Structure formats: structure tokens, C-alpha cells
Image 1 (cartoon, rainbow, N blue to C red):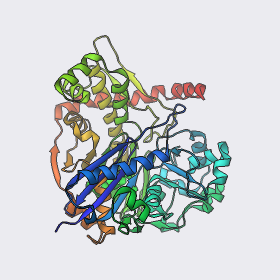
Image 2 (cartoon, rainbow, N blue to C red):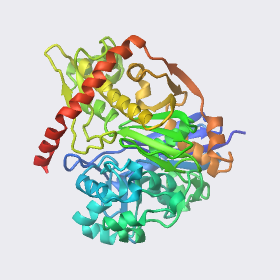
Image 3 (cartoon, helix red, strand yellow):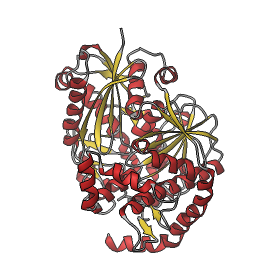
Image 4 (cartoon, rainbow, N blue to C red):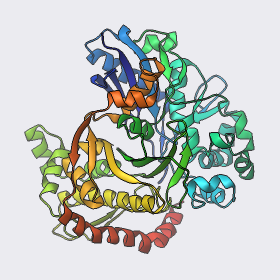
Length: 513
């Protein structure tokens, strides 16, 4: 008889729950949408109460769609966005909306932290600190919302809230504390000196004492949570991590030389290394953030798939909408087909995808999006394709920085929403000049959480064994050499666009504060 686990993926746009068997086959899926709150440019929040509703709905929908008895589900794995910070009072209730990973309001605090000179800054190559990170956001809250900070009994992340909601256990997870809190298990844990230098020494009385590994049992599913979501109480809930990092499990990119490209609203590139390395423009390496004893290196882009959604939601003409409705397909498919007819470079368009700033390699919260080269000939399909291409130009700059820093990249394994577009995958291959491997399971992040769930349930002994047993390759995309040559100039134009506009962009942003 098959064994089943539930993989919960709490992303930016929705919470997705998948029921998987022990071979990695998804038998049912449930989705419930989230809504973002943007009170000011560069800010991003979500309601914790909304999460609660979406969590319950997504699991219930998966169970309803599954042709199995929910009593057969033996474990739960989970992931959330990072760094998304949650503030709970002494009764475990949220004090405010969560600060989403994309929130970059703490740019001033990030600059101050980067200037403090603490040795822990090696994880950002002694360069800029992203305002997305945990100390930056908490320093901003302490300064601007002191009543929230003072009344917070627990401060942790999205993933930790999910585990708390399901088990009642207050914990933090090894993944997010390593990649966003400057935690280093090899050096004794948290860099107390860094937090002292920036005035956050009191935060250690507010963060969880227990830190769990991916796949380690956080606790048992509580009777209350079990009744709400429709599962049997007492099944193990496994420790998770940031959604993109759980996607690394879901594509089985757990060895040096394999680079996971996790696509979605944002885009992350994550690779493994046998040795510690640090360089400007990349994050890490982080020890033990996924697999004990293995270093992890990361880079990424804040706005990718979210820009396509922004464009379609705000600027789509009625002709395209009508065609989509007539054919019974999505508007994305129509634009994808039209964009595929255009030449590489979208006939002279260059997009800088910094709608929410730049995470890497420039770590510039004040950079903003650009669409350059517009003429009266350009159509919505041109802009749609140019956005796709601009995202990949940013990816290519990151890959160059990674390889210059000593990261070995033999193959790129891709998962997430962008893999639904054959065109976008071909653009990725053409711009980077690298072969792409796309696993069979499209929901790799949910699968990654399910993989952790199998370890927590005792179905597999460790994450590597589980991933080897549950991940299957779907297809391979090879680059077209002549397109790679064309794109070299566009990548150069992309980089020049940023360099020539960065000072003026920062100047303009400051007028809006």
C-alpha cells in the first residue's frame, strides 16, 4: 500500500497544498489565494488572518480532490516565504500584518548594518546588506513601531508560523535563520556582536529558543488544527524552510555543480558547495542551511513573474482578452504565442526588472524598473517578451558573478511558474548558454516540502534518499547558439542601463519618501 504525505507551500500569491505518494507522484492539489498589501512604494505586507484562512482552504481542497482516505496521510512538510517576519503577542496572536520578503522599507537600516564592520557580514561578501533581511526589518520596526516591538513575545518567520499554527510549538527553522538572520551553526549560532552593534541585543528574548532542521519533527498535528483541515491528529509535522530552498529538495539539486533556479513571483538561484566561499554580489555560503555539513550559496531577483502579472493585470488590451476568452485559454498563452514570433531582443527593447529594487548582484533597494527602447511599432507582445528577456538578463549577470566567485555550475535545474512557458525556458537557455533540466513535477516547492514530510514521518531516513526516490526529470532545454550570440549585446545593454541610471533612480526614490 502506498504511503502519503502533505506538502504545504505558502507562497506569495497563494498557499498550495499537495498530497504526494512516496514516489513523488502528486495525487491531488489545493490552492487558496493570498493578497498583498502595498501601503507605500517598496513596502509589502500580508494579513496573518488571511494566511490562516488560505491554509485551511488549500488543505481542504486538496483532500476533497484526492481519491484516498485522509487517514492515510502520514506526515506534513511545509515552507513559507522568506524573509517574511511575524510578530505575535503573549497569547500567540499577530500584533500587525506580516512584513513580506519583498518589503524593502528598511534600506537605511540595511546601510547602517553593512557599515558596522561585524565579521558576520562575510555572508554578503562584506558588501551591501539587503533590506529584506531579518535584522533590517526588525530594526525598522523597533524604531518606527516601538509598541509592536516591545509587545512582541515571539518574532519569527512565515514558515515558523505555519509550524506553530499546526502544532502549537514555537520554533525557528535552521534554513531561514541561516540565510536571513546571520545564524551560523559552525560558529556557535547567532552573531551576538552584530545584533549588539545595531541595537537589537534585546531581540534574543523574543526569538524562538528551539531551532529545527529540515525534516526534523517539530511536533504533532494538534487536535484543533486537525479538525479544521480534515486530517487525523497526532501525525508528525516536519521542519521546513524558505519556499525556494524547499524547491532545491524538490528538484534534487543537492550536490555541488547543480544549480537550482526557482522561479515564481521572484527568482532564486541556489547551489551547493563542499567548501566555504564568500564574494560580493552573492549571498553565503551558509553552512547546513539545507543538508548538514554542506555549504549553500544564493543569489536572486526580487521581481520576475510578478512583473508579467503586473503587466497583464494593468495594461492588457481588450483584443487579446477577447481572443483568450474565445479560445478558452489564458491571456498569458496568447501573449506567449505572439511573443514567440518575435526575434531575440524584442526589436530593441531592454527591460530592467527592478520593480521592487535589486536583490543581487547590486543589492540596491533604490533601483527601479525600466522599459527602454520603445517605439510606435512595439506591441503588448513585444513588451511581454522583453520583460521575460529582462528577467533572464538579470539572471545571467548573477550567474557570471557566481562563477567569478568560485561557484561551480555544471547544470541548471529549473522549477516553478516560468517552466509553464516553453518560450521563457528557451530564453533562459539562450541567454545563459546553458542546458536546462526541468523535473517532471511542476510544483517542485510543494514536492520539496512533501520530501521533508516523508523524512519526518519516517518513510525515508534522510533528505537525500527521499529526493532521489521522489524526483524525476521531465525534459531538457538546449540553448540555440546563434541566439546566445545575439543576447550578449542585450545583456551588456541591460547592465549599462542599471549603471547609467542608478544614481538618478536613487535620487528620485528619495523624493517619494
